[in-house]
Image 1 (spheres, rainbow, N blue to C red):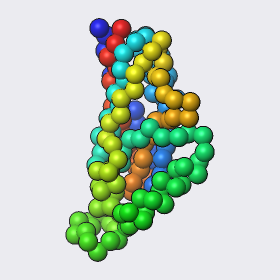
Image 2: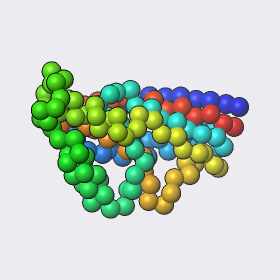
Image 3: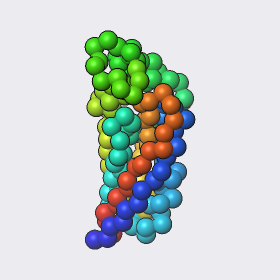
Length: 139
């Protein structure tokens, strides 16, 4: 069994999805691991990771419209507003999505579906630099 790890820095332009599939695939290829499992973990409480459709950008816009309805910025329910009206909604959005994803590796490649991509989902309105830790275990 072999393992490798890395940290990706992902610049987000603000609220929305940023695809990181190509960066993860390049790193995975550099490890030489042919069969195993790659796990990604985001080190933040106001952003998340998703495996989502990468063919039609309308899917991403629909996800954002749904979450905006479900968890609106400035909701008077929230008391934690020290960093702005989008602060607590960003934490709730992250709690409703995922902080880690795992993908099987076969023949040195992630076995994502035809229309699947891996995304950092920024839940704050302004851009940030997010850290995603990658770990692969296999042979």
